[in-house]
Length: 490
Image 1: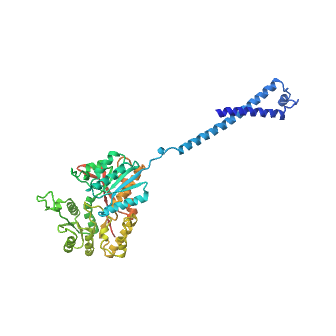
Image 2: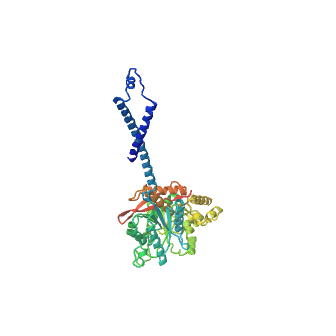
Image 3: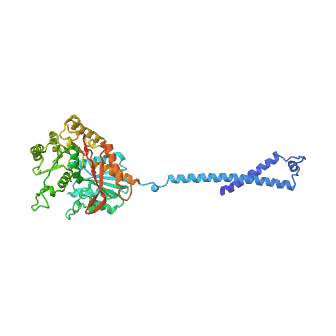
């Protein structure tokens, strides 16, 4: 309004100057002719009508100028306000921007006691860090054993670091070995907003002497938002069906037990009935019409005794049943060599103490230049997803040389490494709103797993089966068991 007042003063001055000049430059004519102009021109400059007309013209012109400049001032003020607001928005504090959201991965790495699974998990996490950057993925390594106080303190420090970082929104623990519940419970006391994922969760009963080693099903499903385990037990339903499909007529299972809760002296006298794995194998074999045979491998106490046992007994079994036989229950790295020499069938065996890993053992007794190249790869290259298809292709070529195509089956990738990749991808979808905040979308998980298989192993036609854990008439929707389909090298 101040600008309008000032403008009014300027308009008054301009109007005065305008009409002063107008009267000098354009004096009214003294025309005597008829018509309106003549009548106006005939007016005396001093007459009242002349003076009135002059004031009216001045007033109208001044009003028009005032309206025109007022509109200009208002428009300029609006542009100034808009510019000011824009500048304020650009300088707003970061509270309007979404906070950074990070995913933490905990794996095990111990140079002396590192297992195959530990290496696969470790390098999977490293590759994810390289893919998404350290600003998105944070990788921690925990000690494998907790018997030492220093190891427990080291693990406790990891969870404290995670708890104190508000940007960490997802925690993936692979593997969720003994003691995971103990440390996650301390994390939950500080943070309830973190989405916690257990991979390869191992349960262990509570012990007053070792509370930091306990892992119980009840605690696990309450502390973790999602648990993903390989369905190792389902292997015993799959193996007989796959063996028959490949052409085997007999399934031979080796096993024994020093302790049995169902036998008086503790020594098991009926292993097939008392051992769940053996019982499942026999039941499924009988169901589909596959011959089942059991042999005790009690003599296999160490590497040399195992080799002697196999050298002595496997030829006898093949002589009895023919080479249309598949062996289960013996160490894969030694069994594959005997299987190839007898041209029998080989299905990579997995028990409840192991996970589905890359078929290392198939490569152990092959020393061709092509296989040597793979064996000599440094760990970070060997475990790189980009090399999985190369490993499988090399294995296939070597099996073809010894006429074993169609007679060897395995999971052609690391399931545990796949779990790490899939969990990270699922977490990203959940953070971005593509996966639900409540509950678990198994369809998304299955799609991510299939993408991993086709893109890394470059194999189509094999999938996964995902089922929730059922225990004592209760189904746990956040505890998922994943069984990968086996691949027959043909």
